[in-house]
Length: 500
Ligand SMILES: Cc1cc2nc3c(=O)[nH]c(=O)nc-3n(C[C@H](O)[C@H](O)[C@H](O)COP(=O)(O)OP(=O)(O)OC[C@H]3O[C@@H](n4cnc5c(N)ncnc54)[C@H](O)[C@@H]3O)c2cc1C
Image 1 (cartoon, rainbow, N blue to C red):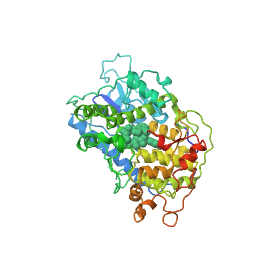
Image 2: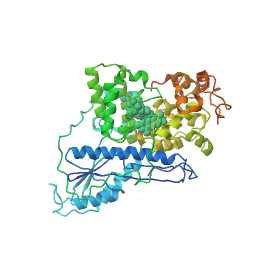
Image 3: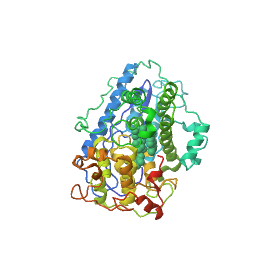
Image 4: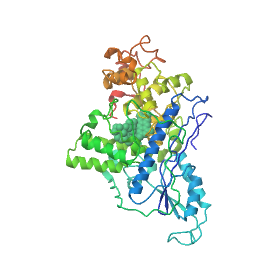
Protein backbone atom coordinates (compact mmCIF):
# COMPACT_ATOMS: atom_id res chain seq x y z
CA UNK A 1 0.00 0.00 0.00
CA UNK A 2 1.06 3.56 -0.52
CA UNK A 3 2.54 4.92 2.67
CA UNK A 4 0.19 7.34 4.41
CA UNK A 5 1.49 10.78 5.19
CA UNK A 6 0.29 10.61 8.74
CA UNK A 7 -1.94 8.19 10.50
CA UNK A 8 -5.30 9.61 9.60
CA UNK A 9 -8.70 8.32 8.93
CA UNK A 10 -9.72 6.52 5.87
CA UNK A 11 -13.24 6.08 4.75
CA UNK A 12 -13.87 4.01 1.75
CA UNK A 13 -16.93 3.08 -0.16
CA UNK A 14 -16.16 0.43 -2.67
CA UNK A 15 -18.28 -0.85 -5.46
CA UNK A 16 -16.32 -3.18 -7.63
CA UNK A 17 -17.58 -4.79 -10.72
CA UNK A 18 -16.68 -7.87 -12.53
CA UNK A 19 -17.58 -8.61 -16.09
CA UNK A 20 -17.81 -12.17 -17.17
CA UNK A 21 -17.20 -12.83 -20.80
CA UNK A 22 -17.81 -16.45 -21.68
CA UNK A 23 -15.42 -18.35 -19.51
CA UNK A 24 -13.05 -15.41 -19.09
CA UNK A 25 -13.40 -13.11 -16.18
CA UNK A 26 -12.62 -9.50 -16.82
CA UNK A 27 -11.58 -7.22 -14.00
CA UNK A 28 -11.91 -3.60 -15.04
CA UNK A 29 -8.91 -1.36 -14.63
CA UNK A 30 -10.23 0.74 -11.81
CA UNK A 31 -10.09 -1.37 -8.73
CA UNK A 32 -11.78 1.11 -6.47
CA UNK A 33 -14.71 2.50 -8.28
CA UNK A 34 -15.91 4.68 -5.58
CA UNK A 35 -13.43 5.99 -3.17
CA UNK A 36 -13.55 8.57 -0.46
CA UNK A 37 -10.52 8.88 1.58
CA UNK A 38 -8.31 11.26 3.35
CA UNK A 39 -4.94 10.19 4.56
CA UNK A 40 -3.50 13.57 5.35
CA UNK A 41 -5.52 14.94 8.16
CA UNK A 42 -5.18 14.20 11.81
CA UNK A 43 -8.78 15.07 12.52
CA UNK A 44 -11.42 13.12 10.76
CA UNK A 45 -13.34 16.17 9.68
CA UNK A 46 -15.54 15.49 6.73
CA UNK A 47 -16.50 18.63 4.85
CA UNK A 48 -20.22 19.03 4.57
CA UNK A 49 -20.14 18.69 0.79
CA UNK A 50 -18.33 15.33 0.83
CA UNK A 51 -21.48 13.19 0.55
CA UNK A 52 -22.54 15.01 -2.60
CA UNK A 53 -19.06 14.54 -4.03
CA UNK A 54 -19.32 10.82 -3.33
CA UNK A 55 -22.69 10.77 -5.04
CA UNK A 56 -21.22 12.50 -8.07
CA UNK A 57 -18.50 9.91 -8.46
CA UNK A 58 -20.85 7.06 -7.68
CA UNK A 59 -23.31 8.27 -10.29
CA UNK A 60 -20.60 8.47 -12.95
CA UNK A 61 -19.43 4.93 -12.21
CA UNK A 62 -22.92 3.54 -12.03
CA UNK A 63 -23.64 5.10 -15.43
CA UNK A 64 -20.43 3.53 -16.79
CA UNK A 65 -21.56 0.12 -15.57
CA UNK A 66 -25.09 0.50 -16.89
CA UNK A 67 -23.78 1.52 -20.31
CA UNK A 68 -21.28 -1.34 -20.40
CA UNK A 69 -24.00 -3.82 -19.47
CA UNK A 70 -26.32 -2.49 -22.18
CA UNK A 71 -23.57 -2.62 -24.80
CA UNK A 72 -22.60 -6.16 -23.86
CA UNK A 73 -26.22 -7.30 -23.97
CA UNK A 74 -26.50 -5.76 -27.45
CA UNK A 75 -23.60 -7.96 -28.49
CA UNK A 76 -25.14 -11.12 -27.08
CA UNK A 77 -23.26 -11.04 -23.77
CA UNK A 78 -23.94 -9.72 -20.30
CA UNK A 79 -22.14 -8.09 -17.40
CA UNK A 80 -21.94 -9.93 -14.12
CA UNK A 81 -22.04 -7.48 -11.26
CA UNK A 82 -21.02 -8.39 -7.76
CA UNK A 83 -20.15 -6.23 -4.82
CA UNK A 84 -17.03 -6.95 -2.79
CA UNK A 85 -13.30 -7.38 -2.99
CA UNK A 86 -11.86 -8.64 -6.27
CA UNK A 87 -9.47 -10.92 -4.40
CA UNK A 88 -12.44 -12.69 -2.81
CA UNK A 89 -14.95 -12.63 -5.64
CA UNK A 90 -12.74 -13.53 -8.59
CA UNK A 91 -11.30 -16.75 -7.17
CA UNK A 92 -14.72 -17.99 -6.10
CA UNK A 93 -16.18 -17.19 -9.52
CA UNK A 94 -13.27 -18.84 -11.30
CA UNK A 95 -13.87 -21.93 -9.21
CA UNK A 96 -17.62 -21.99 -9.79
CA UNK A 97 -17.24 -21.52 -13.53
CA UNK A 98 -14.08 -23.50 -14.12
CA UNK A 99 -12.37 -20.48 -15.68
CA UNK A 100 -8.72 -21.04 -16.45
CA UNK A 101 -7.81 -17.39 -17.00
CA UNK A 102 -8.72 -14.11 -15.39
CA UNK A 103 -7.88 -11.19 -17.66
CA UNK A 104 -7.23 -7.76 -16.22
CA UNK A 105 -5.64 -4.57 -17.34
CA UNK A 106 -2.12 -4.19 -16.01
CA UNK A 107 -1.69 -1.51 -13.38
CA UNK A 108 1.39 0.43 -12.36
CA UNK A 109 0.80 2.07 -8.96
CA UNK A 110 1.11 0.50 -5.54
CA UNK A 111 -2.53 0.30 -4.39
CA UNK A 112 -3.60 -1.16 -7.71
CA UNK A 113 -0.61 -3.54 -7.82
CA UNK A 114 -1.55 -4.71 -4.35
CA UNK A 115 -5.02 -5.70 -5.60
CA UNK A 116 -3.44 -7.54 -8.52
CA UNK A 117 -1.19 -9.45 -6.15
CA UNK A 118 -4.11 -10.34 -3.88
CA UNK A 119 -6.20 -11.59 -6.81
CA UNK A 120 -3.29 -13.66 -8.07
CA UNK A 121 -2.75 -15.12 -4.61
CA UNK A 122 -6.45 -15.90 -4.26
CA UNK A 123 -6.50 -17.67 -7.63
CA UNK A 124 -3.62 -19.89 -6.59
CA UNK A 125 -5.82 -21.32 -3.86
CA UNK A 126 -8.38 -22.47 -6.42
CA UNK A 127 -7.95 -25.96 -7.75
CA UNK A 128 -9.81 -26.63 -10.96
CA UNK A 129 -10.93 -30.18 -11.44
CA UNK A 130 -10.03 -31.51 -14.90
CA UNK A 131 -13.73 -31.70 -15.77
CA UNK A 132 -14.50 -28.15 -14.70
CA UNK A 133 -11.57 -26.76 -16.68
CA UNK A 134 -13.06 -25.65 -19.97
CA UNK A 135 -9.81 -25.05 -21.75
CA UNK A 136 -7.25 -26.71 -23.85
CA UNK A 137 -4.61 -25.99 -21.21
CA UNK A 138 -2.29 -28.80 -20.17
CA UNK A 139 -3.87 -30.79 -17.38
CA UNK A 140 -0.97 -30.01 -15.04
CA UNK A 141 -2.07 -26.34 -14.79
CA UNK A 142 -4.77 -26.65 -12.15
CA UNK A 143 -5.20 -23.12 -10.84
CA UNK A 144 -6.60 -20.23 -12.85
CA UNK A 145 -4.02 -17.67 -13.85
CA UNK A 146 -4.26 -13.90 -13.80
CA UNK A 147 -3.27 -12.60 -17.21
CA UNK A 148 -2.42 -8.92 -17.17
CA UNK A 149 -2.79 -7.00 -20.38
CA UNK A 150 -1.25 -3.58 -21.03
CA UNK A 151 -3.76 -0.82 -21.69
CA UNK A 152 -4.69 2.84 -21.11
CA UNK A 153 -1.84 4.44 -23.08
CA UNK A 154 -1.80 5.65 -26.68
CA UNK A 155 1.67 4.18 -27.29
CA UNK A 156 1.96 0.56 -26.25
CA UNK A 157 4.65 -0.09 -23.67
CA UNK A 158 6.10 -2.86 -25.84
CA UNK A 159 6.60 -0.41 -28.71
CA UNK A 160 8.67 2.13 -26.77
CA UNK A 161 12.18 2.66 -28.17
CA UNK A 162 13.63 2.31 -24.66
CA UNK A 163 13.12 0.30 -21.56
CA UNK A 164 10.86 2.11 -19.05
CA UNK A 165 13.79 2.22 -16.61
CA UNK A 166 15.65 4.38 -19.12
CA UNK A 167 12.68 6.62 -19.85
CA UNK A 168 13.95 10.14 -20.62
CA UNK A 169 13.43 12.57 -17.74
CA UNK A 170 12.58 15.38 -20.09
CA UNK A 171 9.14 15.17 -21.64
CA UNK A 172 10.24 16.68 -24.95
CA UNK A 173 12.90 14.01 -25.38
CA UNK A 174 10.35 11.32 -24.65
CA UNK A 175 7.81 12.81 -27.06
CA UNK A 176 10.27 13.32 -29.92
CA UNK A 177 11.60 9.84 -29.52
CA UNK A 178 8.21 8.09 -29.54
CA UNK A 179 6.93 10.27 -32.37
CA UNK A 180 9.96 9.41 -34.48
CA UNK A 181 10.31 5.74 -33.64
CA UNK A 182 6.94 4.28 -32.67
CA UNK A 183 3.62 3.81 -34.38
CA UNK A 184 0.33 4.04 -32.51
CA UNK A 185 -1.49 0.76 -32.84
CA UNK A 186 -4.92 0.65 -34.46
CA UNK A 187 -7.96 0.00 -32.30
CA UNK A 188 -9.16 -3.57 -32.27
CA UNK A 189 -12.56 -3.85 -33.90
CA UNK A 190 -15.14 -5.81 -31.96
CA UNK A 191 -16.96 -8.58 -33.77
CA UNK A 192 -20.67 -7.82 -34.14
CA UNK A 193 -21.57 -10.70 -31.82
CA UNK A 194 -19.58 -12.15 -28.97
CA UNK A 195 -22.18 -14.34 -27.30
CA UNK A 196 -23.64 -16.53 -26.10
CA UNK A 197 -23.23 -15.51 -22.48
CA UNK A 198 -22.18 -18.02 -19.86
CA UNK A 199 -25.03 -19.71 -18.07
CA UNK A 200 -25.38 -17.71 -14.92
CA UNK A 201 -28.56 -17.49 -12.92
CA UNK A 202 -28.10 -14.12 -11.35
CA UNK A 203 -26.22 -11.47 -13.29
CA UNK A 204 -26.64 -8.89 -10.56
CA UNK A 205 -27.92 -5.38 -10.97
CA UNK A 206 -26.22 -2.09 -11.53
CA UNK A 207 -26.43 -0.65 -8.03
CA UNK A 208 -28.67 2.33 -7.52
CA UNK A 209 -27.44 5.32 -5.55
CA UNK A 210 -30.13 4.51 -3.01
CA UNK A 211 -28.52 1.16 -2.42
CA UNK A 212 -25.21 2.86 -1.87
CA UNK A 213 -27.01 5.12 0.61
CA UNK A 214 -26.32 8.23 -1.43
CA UNK A 215 -28.63 10.98 -2.58
CA UNK A 216 -28.70 11.51 -6.35
CA UNK A 217 -26.49 14.53 -7.02
CA UNK A 218 -27.84 17.55 -8.77
CA UNK A 219 -25.20 19.35 -10.77
CA UNK A 220 -26.92 22.63 -11.46
CA UNK A 221 -23.79 24.46 -12.53
CA UNK A 222 -20.83 23.55 -14.69
CA UNK A 223 -20.25 20.41 -16.69
CA UNK A 224 -22.37 17.36 -15.92
CA UNK A 225 -20.50 14.25 -17.09
CA UNK A 226 -22.48 11.14 -17.97
CA UNK A 227 -20.52 7.93 -17.50
CA UNK A 228 -20.00 5.24 -20.13
CA UNK A 229 -18.72 4.64 -23.62
CA UNK A 230 -21.88 5.91 -25.34
CA UNK A 231 -21.62 9.34 -23.71
CA UNK A 232 -17.89 9.40 -24.43
CA UNK A 233 -18.45 8.70 -28.12
CA UNK A 234 -21.13 11.39 -28.20
CA UNK A 235 -18.64 13.87 -26.74
CA UNK A 236 -16.06 12.97 -29.40
CA UNK A 237 -18.69 13.42 -32.09
CA UNK A 238 -19.83 16.73 -30.63
CA UNK A 239 -16.37 18.18 -30.02
CA UNK A 240 -14.70 17.03 -33.24
CA UNK A 241 -17.43 16.81 -35.82
CA UNK A 242 -20.59 18.67 -34.83
CA UNK A 243 -19.10 21.79 -33.23
CA UNK A 244 -15.81 21.55 -35.11
CA UNK A 245 -13.90 22.56 -31.98
CA UNK A 246 -10.84 20.44 -32.69
CA UNK A 247 -9.84 23.02 -35.29
CA UNK A 248 -9.23 25.63 -32.56
CA UNK A 249 -8.30 23.48 -29.56
CA UNK A 250 -4.80 24.96 -29.15
CA UNK A 251 -6.19 28.49 -28.90
CA UNK A 252 -8.99 27.63 -26.47
CA UNK A 253 -7.49 24.88 -24.31
CA UNK A 254 -6.40 27.19 -21.51
CA UNK A 255 -9.94 28.37 -20.85
CA UNK A 256 -11.82 27.72 -17.64
CA UNK A 257 -15.48 28.46 -18.32
CA UNK A 258 -18.00 26.37 -20.22
CA UNK A 259 -18.01 22.96 -21.85
CA UNK A 260 -16.11 23.70 -25.05
CA UNK A 261 -12.69 25.22 -24.35
CA UNK A 262 -11.15 21.72 -24.13
CA UNK A 263 -12.15 18.19 -25.04
CA UNK A 264 -13.31 17.08 -21.53
CA UNK A 265 -12.37 13.52 -22.47
CA UNK A 266 -10.47 12.87 -19.24
CA UNK A 267 -13.21 11.29 -17.05
CA UNK A 268 -13.99 8.81 -19.80
CA UNK A 269 -10.31 8.07 -20.38
CA UNK A 270 -9.75 7.52 -16.67
CA UNK A 271 -12.70 5.14 -16.36
CA UNK A 272 -11.67 3.20 -19.46
CA UNK A 273 -14.83 4.21 -21.32
CA UNK A 274 -12.74 5.34 -24.31
CA UNK A 275 -9.17 4.65 -25.28
CA UNK A 276 -6.60 7.21 -26.38
CA UNK A 277 -6.03 5.05 -29.46
CA UNK A 278 -9.62 5.70 -30.53
CA UNK A 279 -9.10 9.44 -30.05
CA UNK A 280 -5.92 9.18 -32.13
CA UNK A 281 -7.85 7.47 -34.93
CA UNK A 282 -10.54 10.16 -34.83
CA UNK A 283 -7.94 12.94 -34.94
CA UNK A 284 -6.34 11.32 -37.99
CA UNK A 285 -9.74 10.96 -39.65
CA UNK A 286 -10.53 14.61 -38.91
CA UNK A 287 -7.16 15.67 -40.36
CA UNK A 288 -7.92 13.72 -43.53
CA UNK A 289 -11.53 14.80 -43.93
CA UNK A 290 -11.41 18.37 -42.61
CA UNK A 291 -8.13 19.98 -41.67
CA UNK A 292 -4.77 19.23 -40.08
CA UNK A 293 -3.30 22.06 -38.05
CA UNK A 294 -1.50 22.75 -34.76
CA UNK A 295 -4.70 22.25 -32.80
CA UNK A 296 -5.42 18.81 -34.20
CA UNK A 297 -1.85 17.81 -33.32
CA UNK A 298 -2.08 19.35 -29.85
CA UNK A 299 -4.70 16.94 -28.59
CA UNK A 300 -2.23 14.14 -29.35
CA UNK A 301 0.54 16.17 -27.73
CA UNK A 302 -1.50 16.26 -24.51
CA UNK A 303 -2.31 12.57 -24.71
CA UNK A 304 1.43 11.91 -24.93
CA UNK A 305 1.76 13.73 -21.59
CA UNK A 306 -0.79 11.32 -20.21
CA UNK A 307 1.24 8.38 -21.54
CA UNK A 308 4.41 9.89 -20.16
CA UNK A 309 3.04 10.09 -16.63
CA UNK A 310 1.95 6.47 -16.78
CA UNK A 311 5.36 5.29 -17.97
CA UNK A 312 7.03 7.46 -15.31
CA UNK A 313 5.02 5.62 -12.67
CA UNK A 314 6.65 2.39 -13.86
CA UNK A 315 10.10 3.96 -13.70
CA UNK A 316 9.75 5.75 -10.37
CA UNK A 317 7.30 3.54 -8.48
CA UNK A 318 6.23 4.74 -5.06
CA UNK A 319 8.51 7.79 -5.02
CA UNK A 320 5.72 9.50 -6.96
CA UNK A 321 3.77 9.57 -3.67
CA UNK A 322 6.64 10.55 -1.40
CA UNK A 323 7.09 14.06 -0.13
CA UNK A 324 10.44 14.51 -1.90
CA UNK A 325 9.09 13.01 -5.13
CA UNK A 326 11.26 11.06 -7.58
CA UNK A 327 14.20 13.41 -7.00
CA UNK A 328 13.98 13.13 -3.21
CA UNK A 329 13.97 16.90 -2.87
CA UNK A 330 14.25 18.08 0.70
CA UNK A 331 11.92 20.99 1.44
CA UNK A 332 10.00 22.20 4.43
CA UNK A 333 6.25 21.90 4.06
CA UNK A 334 3.49 23.03 6.37
CA UNK A 335 0.46 20.90 7.19
CA UNK A 336 -1.54 23.77 8.64
CA UNK A 337 -5.08 22.45 8.78
CA UNK A 338 -6.85 25.81 8.72
CA UNK A 339 -4.96 27.04 5.72
CA UNK A 340 -5.46 23.76 3.91
CA UNK A 341 -9.20 23.80 4.61
CA UNK A 342 -9.57 27.35 3.35
CA UNK A 343 -8.01 26.16 0.07
CA UNK A 344 -10.06 22.97 -0.03
CA UNK A 345 -13.36 24.76 0.63
CA UNK A 346 -12.70 27.78 -1.61
CA UNK A 347 -12.33 30.35 1.18
CA UNK A 348 -8.88 31.78 0.54
CA UNK A 349 -9.98 35.32 -0.29
CA UNK A 350 -8.56 34.92 -3.82
CA UNK A 351 -11.55 34.55 -6.15
CA UNK A 352 -9.54 32.72 -8.83
CA UNK A 353 -8.57 30.01 -6.32
CA UNK A 354 -11.96 29.91 -4.62
CA UNK A 355 -13.91 29.67 -7.88
CA UNK A 356 -11.77 26.78 -9.11
CA UNK A 357 -12.09 24.91 -5.82
CA UNK A 358 -15.87 25.43 -5.82
CA UNK A 359 -16.06 24.09 -9.35
CA UNK A 360 -14.09 21.01 -8.30
CA UNK A 361 -16.32 20.16 -5.36
CA UNK A 362 -19.52 20.90 -7.29
CA UNK A 363 -18.75 19.05 -10.52
CA UNK A 364 -15.75 16.75 -9.90
CA UNK A 365 -13.88 18.60 -12.65
CA UNK A 366 -11.47 21.52 -13.00
CA UNK A 367 -9.72 22.84 -16.10
CA UNK A 368 -6.04 22.15 -16.63
CA UNK A 369 -5.31 25.87 -16.20
CA UNK A 370 -7.24 25.92 -12.93
CA UNK A 371 -5.44 22.82 -11.63
CA UNK A 372 -2.06 24.38 -12.27
CA UNK A 373 -3.06 27.64 -10.58
CA UNK A 374 -4.56 26.12 -7.43
CA UNK A 375 -1.67 23.69 -7.15
CA UNK A 376 0.86 26.51 -7.35
CA UNK A 377 -1.09 28.57 -4.81
CA UNK A 378 -1.25 25.71 -2.30
CA UNK A 379 2.39 24.75 -2.51
CA UNK A 380 4.08 28.07 -3.31
CA UNK A 381 1.95 30.73 -1.66
CA UNK A 382 0.66 28.67 1.26
CA UNK A 383 3.66 26.36 1.57
CA UNK A 384 1.35 23.42 2.28
CA UNK A 385 2.47 19.81 1.81
CA UNK A 386 1.66 19.11 -1.82
CA UNK A 387 0.43 15.60 -1.02
CA UNK A 388 -2.54 17.05 0.87
CA UNK A 389 -3.59 18.84 -2.32
CA UNK A 390 -3.00 15.73 -4.40
CA UNK A 391 -5.17 13.70 -2.04
CA UNK A 392 -7.96 16.21 -2.19
CA UNK A 393 -7.87 16.00 -5.98
CA UNK A 394 -7.86 12.23 -5.66
CA UNK A 395 -11.04 12.44 -3.59
CA UNK A 396 -12.84 14.80 -5.94
CA UNK A 397 -11.81 14.28 -9.53
CA UNK A 398 -14.03 12.26 -11.83
CA UNK A 399 -10.94 11.82 -13.99
CA UNK A 400 -8.69 10.82 -11.08
CA UNK A 401 -5.79 8.77 -12.27
CA UNK A 402 -2.84 8.13 -9.91
CA UNK A 403 -0.19 8.64 -12.59
CA UNK A 404 -1.52 11.89 -14.06
CA UNK A 405 -2.56 13.27 -10.69
CA UNK A 406 0.56 12.61 -8.66
CA UNK A 407 2.79 13.18 -11.71
CA UNK A 408 1.35 16.65 -12.25
CA UNK A 409 1.43 17.45 -8.53
CA UNK A 410 5.11 16.49 -8.25
CA UNK A 411 5.82 18.81 -11.17
CA UNK A 412 3.75 21.59 -9.62
CA UNK A 413 5.55 21.18 -6.29
CA UNK A 414 8.98 21.16 -7.92
CA UNK A 415 9.76 17.61 -6.78
CA UNK A 416 9.07 15.85 -10.08
CA UNK A 417 11.57 13.85 -12.05
CA UNK A 418 12.39 16.82 -14.29
CA UNK A 419 13.96 19.65 -12.24
CA UNK A 420 13.09 22.15 -14.98
CA UNK A 421 9.35 21.60 -14.39
CA UNK A 422 9.23 23.90 -11.40
CA UNK A 423 6.40 26.35 -11.51
CA UNK A 424 5.07 29.48 -9.92
CA UNK A 425 1.77 30.81 -11.20
CA UNK A 426 1.14 34.42 -10.30
CA UNK A 427 -2.55 34.91 -9.58
CA UNK A 428 -2.80 38.49 -10.88
CA UNK A 429 -1.08 37.48 -14.10
CA UNK A 430 -3.19 34.34 -14.53
CA UNK A 431 -6.37 36.28 -13.82
CA UNK A 432 -5.44 38.97 -16.30
CA UNK A 433 -4.55 36.47 -19.03
CA UNK A 434 -7.20 33.78 -18.62
CA UNK A 435 -10.16 35.55 -17.02
CA UNK A 436 -9.72 39.23 -17.90
CA UNK A 437 -13.40 40.09 -17.49
CA UNK A 438 -13.83 38.09 -14.30
CA UNK A 439 -16.55 36.00 -15.99
CA UNK A 440 -15.24 32.75 -14.61
CA UNK A 441 -14.97 33.93 -11.01
CA UNK A 442 -18.36 35.60 -11.14
CA UNK A 443 -19.90 32.37 -12.43
CA UNK A 444 -18.72 30.35 -9.44
CA UNK A 445 -18.91 33.18 -6.90
CA UNK A 446 -22.16 34.94 -7.81
CA UNK A 447 -21.61 37.57 -5.10
CA UNK A 448 -18.94 39.05 -7.39
CA UNK A 449 -21.30 39.46 -10.32
CA UNK A 450 -22.51 42.87 -9.20
CA UNK A 451 -18.95 44.22 -9.05
CA UNK A 452 -17.29 46.03 -11.93
CA UNK A 453 -15.31 43.56 -14.03
CA UNK A 454 -11.94 45.02 -13.10
CA UNK A 455 -12.68 44.51 -9.39
CA UNK A 456 -13.80 40.90 -9.50
CA UNK A 457 -10.39 39.32 -9.00
CA UNK A 458 -9.31 41.55 -6.14
CA UNK A 459 -12.51 42.85 -4.51
CA UNK A 460 -10.93 43.37 -1.07
CA UNK A 461 -12.14 42.10 2.27
CA UNK A 462 -15.08 44.50 2.56
CA UNK A 463 -16.72 43.19 -0.60
CA UNK A 464 -15.50 39.61 -0.50
CA UNK A 465 -13.31 38.20 2.27
CA UNK A 466 -9.88 38.59 3.75
CA UNK A 467 -7.00 36.89 1.97
CA UNK A 468 -5.71 34.04 4.13
CA UNK A 469 -2.07 34.50 3.04
CA UNK A 470 -0.23 37.20 1.12
CA UNK A 471 1.10 36.17 -2.26
CA UNK A 472 4.67 35.01 -2.17
CA UNK A 473 5.72 37.33 -4.92
CA UNK A 474 4.33 40.78 -4.93
CA UNK A 475 1.13 42.48 -4.14
CA UNK A 476 -2.04 41.05 -5.56
CA UNK A 477 -2.66 44.16 -7.57
CA UNK A 478 0.66 44.01 -9.38
CA UNK A 479 0.89 41.50 -12.17
CA UNK A 480 4.52 42.46 -12.69
CA UNK A 481 5.34 40.38 -9.61
CA UNK A 482 6.40 37.81 -12.21
CA UNK A 483 9.57 39.80 -12.81
CA UNK A 484 10.17 40.06 -9.11
CA UNK A 485 9.94 36.30 -8.82
CA UNK A 486 12.43 35.86 -11.62
CA UNK A 487 14.88 38.38 -10.16
CA UNK A 488 14.64 36.63 -6.83
CA UNK A 489 15.65 33.44 -8.62
CA UNK A 490 12.72 31.58 -7.14
CA UNK A 491 13.65 28.61 -9.23
CA UNK A 492 10.28 28.24 -10.86
CA UNK A 493 9.59 28.94 -14.47
CA UNK A 494 6.99 31.63 -14.84
CA UNK A 495 3.52 30.82 -15.96
CA UNK A 496 3.67 32.95 -19.04
CA UNK A 497 6.52 30.80 -20.36
CA UNK A 498 4.51 27.63 -20.08
CA UNK A 499 3.56 25.92 -23.25
CA UNK A 500 1.39 23.47 -21.35
C1 LIG B 1 -2.28 19.28 -10.33
C2 LIG B 1 -2.87 18.52 -11.51
C3 LIG B 1 -3.53 17.31 -11.30
C4 LIG B 1 -4.06 16.60 -12.39
N1 LIG B 1 -4.72 15.40 -12.16
C5 LIG B 1 -5.20 14.70 -13.22
C6 LIG B 1 -5.86 13.45 -13.02
O1 LIG B 1 -6.00 12.93 -11.91
N2 LIG B 1 -6.35 12.81 -14.12
C7 LIG B 1 -6.20 13.31 -15.38
O2 LIG B 1 -6.68 12.70 -16.35
N3 LIG B 1 -5.56 14.47 -15.59
C8 LIG B 1 -5.05 15.18 -14.56
N4 LIG B 1 -4.41 16.37 -14.79
C9 LIG B 1 -4.14 16.79 -16.18
C10 LIG B 1 -5.17 17.72 -16.83
O3 LIG B 1 -5.42 18.81 -16.01
C11 LIG B 1 -6.46 17.02 -17.22
O4 LIG B 1 -6.18 15.83 -17.93
C12 LIG B 1 -7.31 17.91 -18.13
O5 LIG B 1 -7.58 19.13 -17.48
C13 LIG B 1 -8.60 17.21 -18.47
O6 LIG B 1 -9.42 18.05 -19.24
P1 LIG B 1 -9.64 17.74 -20.77
O7 LIG B 1 -9.98 16.31 -20.98
O8 LIG B 1 -10.58 18.75 -21.30
O9 LIG B 1 -8.16 18.01 -21.34
P2 LIG B 1 -7.69 18.42 -22.79
O10 LIG B 1 -6.97 19.71 -22.68
O11 LIG B 1 -8.77 18.35 -23.77
O12 LIG B 1 -6.58 17.32 -23.13
C14 LIG B 1 -6.90 16.09 -23.80
C15 LIG B 1 -6.44 14.93 -22.94
O13 LIG B 1 -5.03 14.98 -22.76
C16 LIG B 1 -4.68 14.51 -21.46
N5 LIG B 1 -3.97 15.57 -20.73
C17 LIG B 1 -4.08 16.90 -20.91
N6 LIG B 1 -3.24 17.55 -20.07
C18 LIG B 1 -2.62 16.61 -19.34
C19 LIG B 1 -1.65 16.65 -18.30
N7 LIG B 1 -1.12 17.80 -17.83
N8 LIG B 1 -1.25 15.48 -17.75
C20 LIG B 1 -1.76 14.30 -18.18
N9 LIG B 1 -2.66 14.22 -19.17
C21 LIG B 1 -3.09 15.33 -19.74
C22 LIG B 1 -5.98 14.16 -20.76
O14 LIG B 1 -6.20 12.78 -20.89
C23 LIG B 1 -7.01 14.97 -21.55
O15 LIG B 1 -8.29 14.38 -21.51
C24 LIG B 1 -3.89 17.10 -13.71
C25 LIG B 1 -3.22 18.32 -13.89
C26 LIG B 1 -2.72 19.03 -12.81
C27 LIG B 1 -2.00 20.33 -13.06
